[in-house]
Image (cartoon, rainbow, N blue to C red; front, side, top):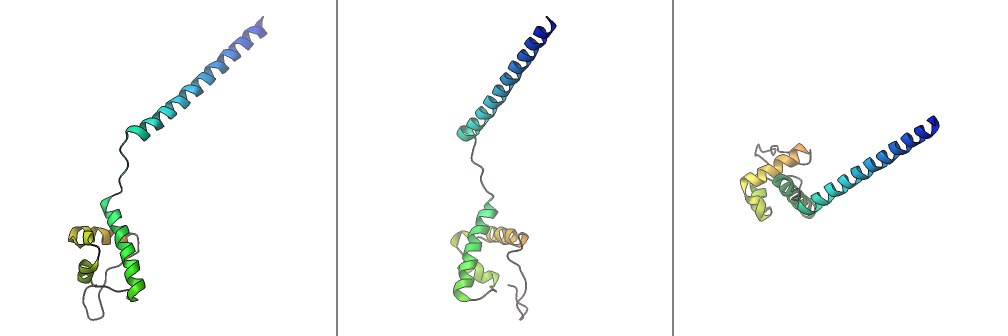
Length: 113
């Protein structure tokens, strides 16, 4: 009789464990469904979007002209229209500077670049 009782307890424990696993799976499924259907998409920061746009423009500029130095004022005049705003351009340049992609310095004639 004792062996039978142990078997029933083990069977009940296994049944509870499987039920718990099903509940956990259903919870994760519902959570993912909620995120896909109702959560707002994650937007990248504007500085990152501007930096990507500026990086592509700089790569094209360097490839076509062969120059690796450009004055900041010329950058404001020739860059994409969205980046002609001083605050957006500075944010994009700061992001590229933090990633060690673009650097600010001076021309040999002591002019800012």
